[in-house]
Image (tube, rainbow, N blue to C red; front, side, top):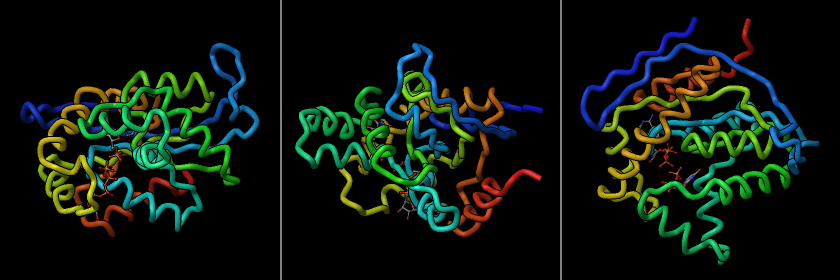
Length: 225
Ligand SMILES: Nc1ncnc2c1ncn2[C@@H]1O[C@H](COP(=O)(O)OP(=O)(O)OP(=O)(O)O)[C@@H](O)[C@H]1O
Ligand SMILES: O=c1ccn([C@@H]2O[C@H](COP(=O)(O)O)[C@@H](O)[C@H]2O)c(=O)[nH]1
């Protein structure tokens, strides 16, 4: 039985309370046109959560333990900037402002990364970031995620982690961090709500230490009994 209740505890802070499950990969898209992925039929898990909730950290653990390939949408966009692509300046400006890059750009990068990898199971980290991303990805690729891992963490904790990350990211400054939080609440939570309505969200308390979070993640990947 689903049980979602959203509490707004301050103008900037919202939490989702969710109970969950999920599956299935569909290789056709709604327009009937063929995606480059229609033959491959990869298994996909979306890894979602606010900026600094620990998605990348836990994806590294999942790769090691469960043999998935980790595709961070943000990393693919940053690599696109470095490659000198024609979209590089636009992507750079959008990341600096914490804005969501057009779906077409991100989906092309994800499709390419999946096609170029022999693995058939992928963690897609940090995408979809809004409902338009989600609908476009499903329509273009025909992929429905097996499930969605949702890293639930307070803004206070995420802010502390991002300010301490020290990886030289242009968006890890307090001004952009606050913009990213707002984008997450205004646009990205809707994706989690959508998949929750399909019974596909597995919520993780991501405010705990890394090892404890991974114990919960492992349970989410354990086959249903
Ligand atoms: N459970 C945790 N407890 C404390 N620190 C953590 C935890 N998980 C990750 N961190 C640290 O917090 C920072 C952000 O983690 P990470 O990069 O994994 O987050 P993310 O969700 O992928 O962020 P973004 O969405 O900005 O890419 C890193 O410095 C990481 O080492
Ligand atoms: O699907 C995506 C993923 C990322 N972005 C942009 O990149 C930054 C950083 O993303 P991280 O997941 O924190 O690496 C994000 O703020 C967006 O500007 C995107 O547009 N679409």
